[in-house]
Image 1 (cartoon, rainbow, N blue to C red):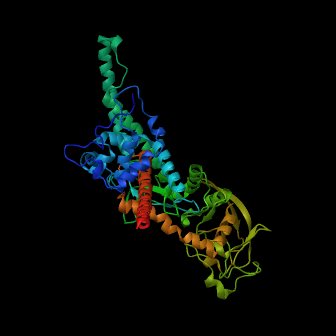
Image 2 (image 1 turned 90 degrees about the horizontal axis):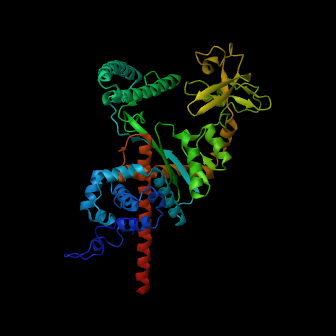
Image 3 (image 1 turned 135 degrees about the vertical axis):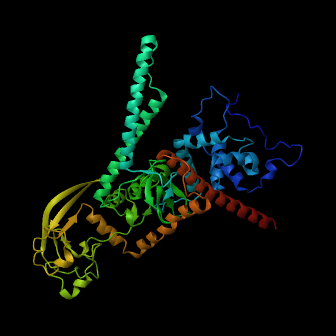
Length: 525
């Protein structure tokens, strides 16, 4: 006996009123190509999750996945709308093989197969690669903001949580007292049958107390980090989805958001890797994405481009270690052409007439690129030609790890004529320059980006990297997540990216077949 349930409607059965359901779907309709592609994939990662020894025979996961993916391609994301489509839309009825799938079944299925969905995404990517649409010669990495399923007007702060916890502690203490009194009364009557379980209302209060305590700890950590960054306002956490982060939106204002990231292949704009992070620091994800791409496709990336935010020392070193030709704008830490600080003898001062030409930093003071480093003596020379020897090493704990900086200081700033343009008003020990272990990598990246051929590769980044987001938001209509919680949102985003790739693959196959049919007709003529 076959394990899978038999479809309730045979597509080829001629009913009383012709035509058949299959006749209602045109030859090159996208739903036919979608079904053809899905039938050619391996579904063993999905089917092994089912237990065939009990319950009614289930619908094959290929059918359920097809309905969800086709719905995304048609801008239908709601499980209730998908249920309606399976009962009323001819294309959905054909794809679902006559099943009218309950919205609860769709909702549970969409969340359940997290790992199997990764395998499906990889299979579709390998199929596109086999057809020449993915080459990994030129890849762009970028992130965007998608709103979380939470209100921007209902957020927690550490102060709010502390107040609620204090009130909750009083309620819990009162309920515990009442429970103990009830237990004592019951014990006198039936000591042997006394229940040790907490009353439902007390158990719920305890769980809420534990959850709020976790939220409070996260908010306190966020407040400490914000103070280090010079931000005085307290951190906020959305009440409905505590994994999301309140961030500024490009269209203005603040709202709970997630940051989806994708790596896009430049050959035909297919997504080759995707993920979601709760905060704005997508620059920390690019090395992980590069490793996943190589693992999934069995091929190393040729050229990888990302915007200025990704030019961190860790990323520069990681790309060199992986032998990936990385492209990102990086400011050179040493004087460049046109900077009067670039001179043959750094011990000689910059002429006074050229002082206004010295680069400035964000604080309107002379920038680091006006100071010359001498590796032979391990010291810097300031624009006035004064020595700045090594003073000390500082270690900072950052969210992404520890940063070690060597500090070089000038001891002759007191009577320097450039002091007003060079020193920060709060500086008490003279001008200092920080140097970390990644300065050589920054120098090499800056030099690379001056080469016209390399700069041309980077200039393609905006089109390649932004194309998926434009299509996903404008054509697929995904501007807000339906699910809550980071892991569920990651799964939802992978469904979206899988549908995006399938939509492109279906269009490409349809174009090839239409071209082949046209050539066949021409040959006959």
